[in-house]
Image (cartoon, rainbow, N blue to C red; front, side, top):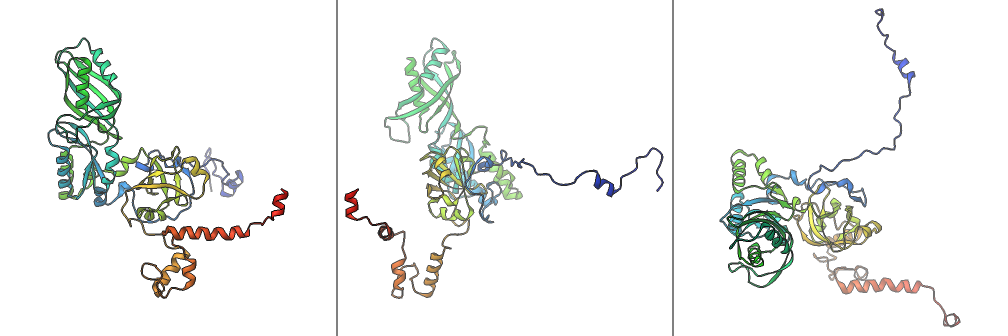
Length: 437
């Protein structure tokens, strides 16, 4: 072919192949998986310690954010900005009626005039209500002093003095018995003071069950002028505050209307959050899919079923057990620390405190071993009754060999039976040799 003067001549394929070596060179660099932006309980999943990476994924279950809308609502909660005047019980009843659900609960009663953060749990999420009620709270309040004080600094000092463990008796009008109790104030500070109207705005972080009304009375007594609570707003309940997707009653009503009339569930998904959001501060334990349903039925959390575990797990600490898709299975009490888990290959990791997931969300994967399969076959043949108990047709060999580990007396007998042959196999030492030693 004719080439123009000055134009570069293209290399032939054969020439290109001789110019350099074409092969993938070995590298020590490992591809990094960035899970810092993963949602809810899967956040920083790659930072968890790996027990084993081998398991069989099951198609059951779903990521909490991708559940069907009916399941999403039934396993969610609302961070509600409670309006002034209705009681907490009334507000929760209204939400139950709006969403047409059977069960709702809340994170701790607010007095009718008090506004702010009220976590309303729906259906399955009500299993977390107990832990939410005992979580710490934060408030912003207004205290009215009955007489003038010397300076703003005097009020600030008095508020900071009222920290630590304090004696409190519930106010005259209270829903509980008026007994003296101890409640802890973690931190408190004065935000602003108006000397003309004798009003002070303060912020307080406290234990669940603290009466801010009583705290204001104590503040007045400490200053020697008397005081009372004028206004109160809860700004944080547990790990959720005012900026964590807080919604109003109107938002809930509009979201349900939008779904009923336009079949648009995006607003409901924005108003309602998955229950897993409440557990993001807990230490995590990731289980194999095959172990999930057994835990839902109350099985012990054993080490062979663990895939990953978090750093810093302490003995008797409350942890959350999750699936590989990020669903919460249960709350549990740790029986092993992180250090012990990393050195063991068997044993009970934790005991269940509260099961969250519904049974049979995942398929049953227990009872597939050789003994269980033999037992099922014998039940079908009539050699055992329908409950797996021996009957007249049961062979004697089965009665002698089979150990029902649910029966404590048989379990002890089996342990003794196993121990006796071991003693017989042990080397026998004569009396003469013992005396000689």
